[in-house]
Image (spheres, one colour):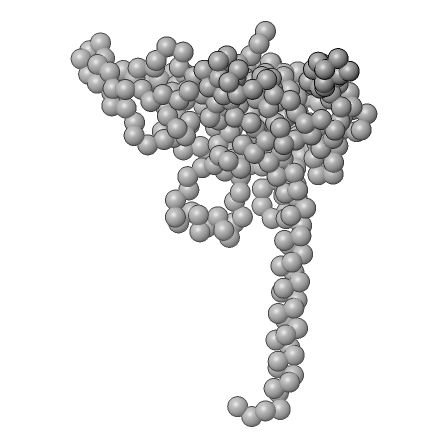
Length: 285
């Protein structure tokens, strides 16, 4: 059964709901600022200057992407071999080879000048389920976005003051926070709010109140073998973390290098101060 599992974050044909007369004669004004509800900040293992990706969570997130999101989305900037690189999901080379072979990749031309399909290889990039954006738009109503960088392309509006605070707290998880809120935020519209046919109300969507993407996740949809809860909330957390890794595969290494640079600068500043005191200690001020 094909799931319209669009982590769509912007896949959908977003259409703001116009104000409509309710049965009692009242009217509900269409909201003018989105999202209607601000996403809540979540706790992530990769948050903060010393954060690290949870390898088990990344592996679960991959399977959520594979079983749900890949029916509509590509990740053209991510190769299967990246799944075994340090700091990532930590699959073995043999596992990566087996995972890649579950995808069909168009290749060619062959000796007869024809294109053909073959099992995926570790060197291949995640394929698109559609041959081109036009085919995707014809099937879904709009071409779904590539998810390679979606965790960096989406975020939470924090305002001027919190943006300054984030500089010191190193808050960089706006993308995963938004994705998690969107995937878990589907709900019934308020009374009197008109949802167009084929639309779905989600107050966390950052472009409108209604989107065409149906809720992509349901409890028990993706089997886990490590004992993690098979719930919508857990699926959303896992795939959000996986998409963050896909967008920033060297996040942990970057944090480590940044911390080393800060330590060096602190030590260097101390040495320079001590040198200055030594050089000028005999000079009267």
